[in-house]
Amino acid sequence: MFTLQPRHRLDIRLRDFAYALIAVAWARKPERLSARLEARWSPGGQGLACRSVRSGFHLLLESLALPAGSEVLVSAVTHPDMVRILEAHGLVAVPVDLDVATLAPRLDLAERLVTPRTAAMLVAHLFGGRLAMGPLAAFAERNRLLLWEDCAQAFAGAHTGDPMADVSMYSFGALKTCTALGGALLNVQDPSLLARMRATQFRWRLQSRRTYAESVLKFLAFTLITRPFPYGVLAAIHGALGRDFDRTVNTSVKAFRPGPLLSQLEARPSAPLLAMLAYRLRTFDDARLRRRAAAGEWLNARLPGHLTLAGHQMESRTHWLFPIISREPDQLILACRRAGVDGARGASSVTVVPAPAGRPEADPVAARQMMAGLVFLPAYPELPRRSLVLLVEAAEGAGRNLRITRRPGRVMQS
Image (tube, rainbow, N blue to C red; front, top):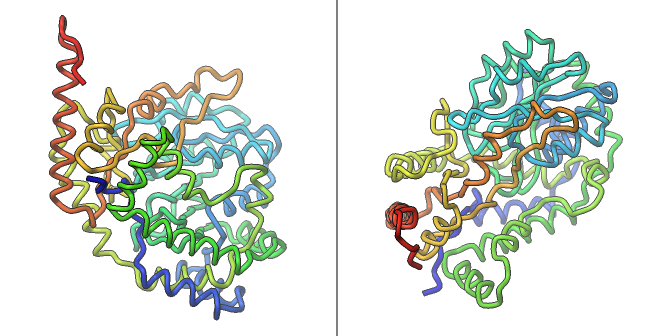
């Protein structure tokens, strides 16, 4: 009765949690661990280990010191903290609307948004897929822009950044593929810039051992409670009490507290975090990644016609999340939950970037429409095939209800 398949499952095993807790006790010498990790990540010497992608992005902007008022073209859907960091450095984020089929920024629009103040372009690879970087790199070169890629949602094992990008940023936070429960790895093409970033980060405080241990224990508890039975019980309790279940789930996995952001970002990764990240890369389960991609493709091939997979024309996708565009998203979520499978509007923290004041031509209409109808469905490899079948049936049922609702002279039946 209370069983509910969760919307997302952390990419981590119980023995990985055990390794993290042991690392809290024994890991020492973060400088040596960082050097070894960076050499493994980038044998060419372009790697940099950070506490998070957001910390690395702050570090990048601090080291570049772009003139105040400089503009950065950004994917119209991205993590809001990336925009907050830009603004904290006195920069202006100008959204470039997306092609919903590929989730790539539309370069025809970007050409019209470039001004003499435009200094860089930040592109986000969304939901476990990768964008084709060739056209983006050509656009950046033609307009003399720096090109940064946010690969937080796109780690797939072997790929560690596109050489056409000036900076590539990968996240290993709690919800990400190959999670180390924190941490990020960057590729920085400019040796001078990389040296400045290293020097600046070395002056930051070291993340405490206790902080990392608390994170490990929190996500161990999250992993245990997001098994189908306890997760279903938790959802039922929230429903009975009239509380927002989505809010509880989403806030429980946030890495940073509300309040001033930059001061929280200015921390080097601790020795336990670095040791855990090196271990996760050594033991990366590419077989699970292939199963996850296959589960997403199986589900995509069986979606009813009234639903569309955001990014269905992407060249490469591994379905870190499975984002569906629906005309009636709440009705779809309700149908899925009745079938024992959770769906959510806010399973990812990305949002639409608003146009800056005085730039109405930058209004991201397509991105806003996409996000208004977006539902994240589970498609991870541990989800039983029976649950995937029920998910398809629930989606088909929601479609039938939608057609009945919109038929002239008929009243929607609950």
